[in-house]
Amino acid sequence: MDRFRMIFQYFQSNSESVMNGICGLLALASVKMYTSFDFSCPCLPHYNTVYGLGIMFIPPIILFLCGLILNRQSLVMLEEWRRPQGRRKKDPAVIRYLCSSIMQRAMVAPVVWIVVTLLDGKCLICAFSSSMDPEKFVGFANASTAQVQQLLAKVACKDDELMRNSTTRKAVSRYLRCCSQALGWSILLILIIAAFLARWLQPCFNQAALLQARHWSNYIDIEQKIFEETCCEHSRLFAHKCILHFFESMRQEIKLHSFSLPREEEGAEEEKDLLRGITDQDQVNKLLKTWYCEKPPLDVSQAAQRHPLVPERCPLRTSKVSWL
Image 1 (cartoon, rainbow, N blue to C red):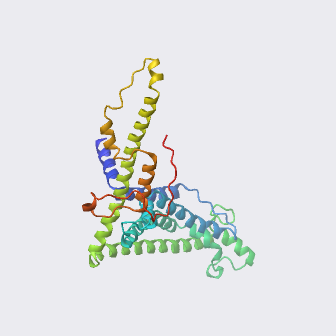
Image 2: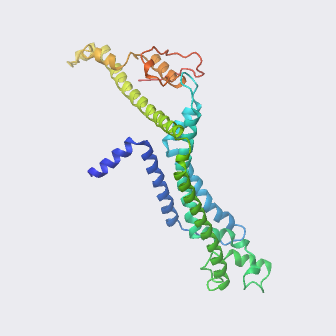
Image 3: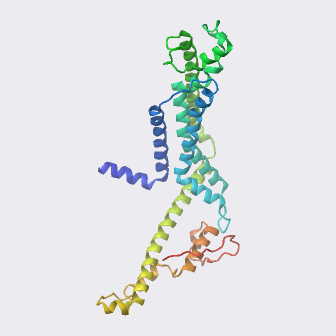
């Protein structure tokens, strides 16, 4: 249990590790889904292609969208891209780095699905059996054009009575399976070579720019997490203060029931410090609006300078939020 707890804490503290873990789980899920999927080709001339190509490409699109949804950096990248300029300038290199990282992780599971389907060969056999040239195979010489189309459409149906012991069906099936596996292994080889070249040629490019983009992309993610944690802490203290005010207003009625309340002054100064001077709803709304419209510059030497709570050039309108 201690080992699993340490692994879980490591994934919690490392955003990239979490994304890599989700990426790996999606890849394993894609393989498990395909192996447990009951593939059943319709064996009809006008439906085989749609069914085969649909099974090959529709699940990868779903897996790709799931990879984008589950990746927390997708929201971080969109927020950084769409936020107003404010006091902090946008760095296109950071946005490009985030987009590249998100796309690479989201593409793993779809590529795994496509490669697995090609290596298995069933989808390609079902999709393109009707498109094969019957002159390349013996057994179709005495059949009409309509019969040839029907027989080619049933190549994927090895349990069919007409095609169960047909050597022609086996020949067409073997040919398409060989083409499918050759294509699958070729795609896998190209991806491995591309990853190898990207890994080994990376030092040949500008390492300083890459380190800067990676550093500030991690900073944006960490900054957003800390801001959300700080907001949660402030909300808890704010709610506690509002509840104390409510009970203070009801003190006379509560005294009638012989219920004693601690005095609000106890620890009030400490709570005020923890609230950081933000003590009403309008101030909270202005604070959140300012955070979105004018994030502070990346210069901690200016931390002591007063930051205006109401930016004039922010296009958003302050909305009323019910805190109670």
